[in-house]
Amino acid sequence: MSQDTIADALNMIRNAKRSRKDKVKVQIISNLLIRILKIMKDEGAIKNYKINAKDKSMEISLGNVMDCKAIKPRFTVDTDQIDKYMRRYLPARGVGTIIISTNQGLLTHTEAIEKNIGGCLIAYFY
Image (cartoon, rainbow, N blue to C red; front, side, top):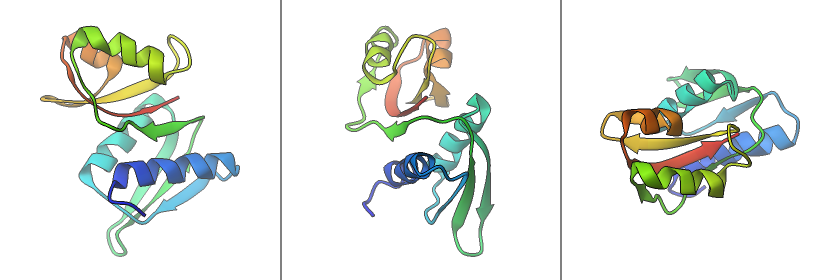
């Protein structure tokens, strides 16, 4: 395991999906990871997640996620640059979501464009 909890958790989710498992247990928890999982749940990429505070782990039920990765290095983007990174990381227009950390919290790329807010690219999934 590396120092990047987000990348480790998203790699575990991707590997579990490739091996046709419907649940994965992640041994690392962070507030940023919980917010990312909430966005993934709202978008339908995962079904549910349960946090076990006793042993500091979480169990994630997978949904219809095909691929998910952390974006490194974490590029800082303006609103007009988001389209460039959508073409780079997502397979097609209207498919997938990029998660952006803004001064108003974590937003999807569509919310950031609507609110005309730039930020730092965190992860993507489709």
